[in-house]
Length: 443
Ligand SMILES: [Ca+2]
Ligand SMILES: [Ca+2]
Ligand SMILES: [Ca+2]
Ligand SMILES: [Ca+2]
Image 1: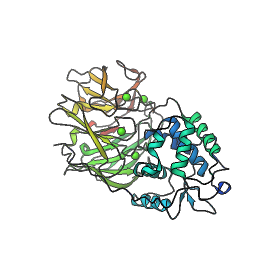
Image 2: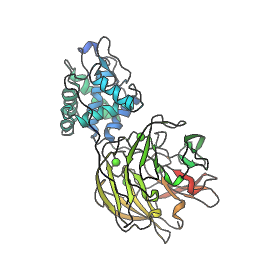
Image 3: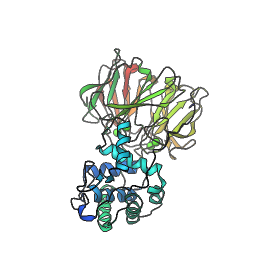
Image 4: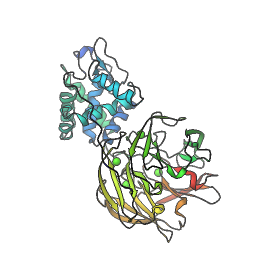
C-alpha cells in the first residue's frame, strides 16, 4: 500500500581531510576580515535563518554566522587574492571548494549561489563528524559556539577570534529571539500563492504581493507543463530553503520532485529526483513540516485509517526519509484530512473536516513523534464539502488562513488572528474568482 518501499541512503560525498577550508592566508589577506558585515545584512539574516531551520539554537547559528562574516563578509562570490579561499566559508580551491563545485553542478546549480553554499556547508557538517557539528550542538553560549566552529570547521591559522565573536554577537542581537516561522511558498517570501493546474497540463501560479487582501495577486506565470492530472500535483519544500518544490505522484507510485532554484519565475526548476516510491493512490499523499525544520515530511493516510509520516532527515536528495511514525488513527476518508501550521510555531497541526461540517484541529505539541497532538479545538463550522477547503498562510505571519472555493468560483479567506484557539478568524475577504476546486492549490 502506501508504504515506503525502503530507506536508501546515497553514498556520502568523499571528504578530504588533507585540505582544510578557509583561512589559508593570515589575517590581513583574509577576505572579509576588514570589510565585515557587522551591520545586519540580508545574507547574514538568510544564513542565520537557514541554520536555525536546521535545528541550531540562536547562539549556535550566530556563532557560525560570525565566522562566515570574518571569512568573507558572507559574500558567496568572495575570492581570496592572493590565496585559495572561495565563497562564504572560504573553502580552499583544490580541496573542499572543488567538492562544493561538483556538488553544485550535480544539481544543476551555481557554486556562487548563497543558498547552495549554505546547503553544502550543512552537508559537510552532517556527513563529516570532524567538522564539528556534534561539538557545535553541545555548546551553551555564543562565544563557545563561535570558537568551536572556528577550530573545528574553519581551522584557521591566525583567526582573529575576537572579530568572529564580535560579529556573532551582532548577528545574535539582530536576528535572535522569538521569530515567526514562515511557511514556504513558491517565491520564498512566505505568502501563499494560488496555483491552478489547467486542462492543457500547464500549472499556472499567481504571485501574492499583498498578503491577506482582496485579490492580492499580480501577474501569473507558468510553473509546470505536462501535468495532466491535478490530483497528482503537490508543492512542498523538500530542502527547507523556503521555496516550494513541485512534486508529481506518478502512476507507478514513484514521487518525483523538481528543485525550486529560482523562486517565483517561469519554470524555476533545476534538478529532479525520486523522493519516494510505492505511493499508488495520490489522494492519500500529503506533505507537511511536522518538526519545524522547514523540510517537509511525507505523509500517507493509509487504508486502515492510520496516518503515517516519514521524517525528512536529508533534504533534497534521493529518498531523504530517516524515520517514520504513526501520527493519527481513525482517519478513514483521506479527502477530509488537512495539515497546516495554525499557530506559527513551524509545526503543522492536523485537521479533519468532519461529516457535521466542523473543522477539528489537533495541536502539534511534540513535532515529529508518535501521535504528537496535545490539544484539540474546533476552528470552523459549516464546511460540508471537504474538497473546497484550503488552509495556507496568506500574509506570512506563520498562521494559516482558512479558505473555501465556492460553487461560483470565488475563493473566500478568513484571516487567522489568534493562532490555535476556537474559531481564530478575525476578518474575511474574497481573494480570487473563477477557480475550480478540483484544479486549485493554495500554498
Ligand atoms: Ca525548497
Ligand atoms: Ca520537517
Ligand atoms: Ca503549529
Ligand atoms: Ca496568516
